[in-house]
Image (cartoon, rainbow over all chains, first blue to last red; front, side, top):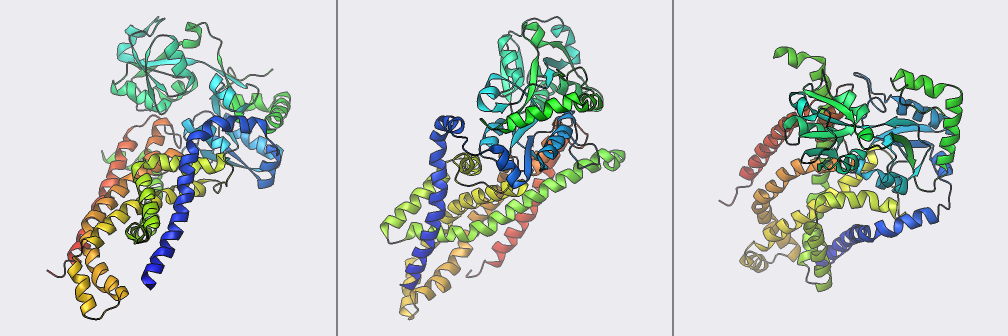
Amino acid sequence: MKEKLLALALAGAMGLTLAACSGGGTASAPSSAPSGTQESAAPAESDLAYVQDKGTLVVGITYFAPMDYKEEGSDEWIGFDADLAKAFAESLGVDVEFQEITWDYKVEELNSRAIDCVWNGMTLTDDVLSAMGTSTPYCTNYQTLVYSAGRAAEFEGLTSLEGLNIAVESGSAGEDAAEALGATTVPVQAQSNALMEVSAGTSDAAVIDVLMAAEMTGEGTSYSDLVYSLNLNEAQDLPSEEYGVGFRQGSDLVDAFNTFWAEKVADGTVSDTATTYGLQDAVILD
Amino acid sequence: MLEFFTSSTFQTVISALNSGFLKTLQLFFITLVGALPLGLIISFGSMSRFAPLRWVTRTVVWVIRGTPLVLQIIALFYVPGIQKWFNWPSGESGRMLAVCVAFIINYACYFSEIYRGGIQGVPKGQQEAGLVLGMTRRQIFFHVTLLQMIKRIVPPISNEIITLVKDTSLARVIALQEVIWMGESFMKGNSGIAGLTWPLFFTAVYYLIFSGIVTVLLGKLERKLSFFQ
C-alpha cells in the first residue's frame, strides 16, 4: 500500500512537470498568429526601462566579419557593429552582452526576450520590417554571385540565373534576388553552408552578401577556388540593400537608438569606426 | 603533416572544439542523471492500477515520443518568453538549462518504456515465490523484481545512451555552442579563421572516441550484472 502511494505521489509530481511542458507544446501552434497583434497593441511597459532595469543589453549576433567577429587569440567581440553596440549600451548606462543566435530564430529570440536587439549587418527586408521595430538604415550592401573559378566563363556577363541551381541562405535577401532572376534555389541554413554547396559541386553557384563574399572566399580559406562578381541588385535594377538594427516591435529602444546614432554620426565616431573596419564606402552618413 | 598539427590554426580549432565538447559532455551527463530516475517514476505511472493516472502518463509518453526532440527544444525555449509566462536566465546558462530540461523529459519517457518492459518481463512466479517466503510487496519489488529488471534492461538502455551521445548535437538549434556548432563556426568565421570545413568533419573524432568509451563501460557493466547464470 505504501509503495502504491509513493508511486502515486511521484507520478503526480511528474505529471505536473510534463503538463507544464505539453502545455507549452500545444500553445506553440496558435501563438504565431495572435502574438504579432498582442505585441504591437500592448507595449504597456517601456522596453528601454526593462533593459535598464536588468542592467544588460543582450545583442543577438552571428559571426560576421567585419561586423561582429573575434580576432585570432582574442575572446572579445569586435567589428563595426560590435564596437557601436558597446557604445550604445554605454549611452544607456547598461552592460553589453553578445549572444550568438541561430539566424532563422532571430524574431523568436527577440519576442521571447532571450535577446534585446539584432545588430549584425541585418538587411532590412520586408520580412524584417514587418516583424521587428527597426532603426534607420546605417549601411549599404548588395547581393553577389559566388561560383568556382574553373567555371568563370559560364557566369561572366550573365543577366539571368534560369536553369541554374543556386544555393542561398534560407530567408535571406539573397534568396529573393536569386528567385527574382529565375534561379532554382537551394535554401540552406547559413551563407557559409551556401558556399560549401558550391565548393562541393552540389549547387552551381551561391548568392550571398558582398561583404561576406569578400571575407570568406579567396586565399587562406577553404574556398580559395571560388570567385565572386556581379552586383545582383544592379542586374535587377534594384536599389542597394540597407542594413539596420532590429528591436522588439513597438519598442522605445528604436528611438533611443536613432537619437544615439545621430549623435555618433555628428561627432564622427561612426565614420571613424567604419574606416577602421574598411566600410567607409558602405556606411550611410546622412 | 606534423607542421599542420603544431600550427596555430590547428591549436585554435582544437581548443574551440574542446570547449564545445565540454558543453556536449555536460548536457550528456546532466540528461542521464535526470532522466534515469525520472524514467523509473514515469514507468510506475504507466503501470499504475489507478486508471486515470495510467492514461495521463501514457498520453504524455505518447506525445513526447511522438514528436521530434528538436521541436520540443525550440518550443520549450521560445514559447514561455513569447507567451510571457517566464524568461529563461540570460545568456549561455539559460540555453543550457532549457536544453537540459527538454532532454531529461524526452529521454525519461524512452527510459520509462524500457523500465516497464524490464519490470513486466520478470516472471510472475518470482513475485509469488516472494509472497510464499513472507516478504512484503516493497521487499519483493526492490529485492526480487528490480534486481532482475536492472540486468535485463542494460542492453536497451545502452542503445539509448549511445543515441544520446549524438542527439546532444540537436541543442545547437537554440544556439547552444556544443561541438558541432563549434565545428561549423570555422566555416563562417571564428577567432579570425573563416572558410574552413575540416573542423566540422573533425568533430566525428570526438563522438567516436566518446561513444567508444561509453560502449566499453556499458559492456563491463553488462558483464558485471550477468549473475544468475
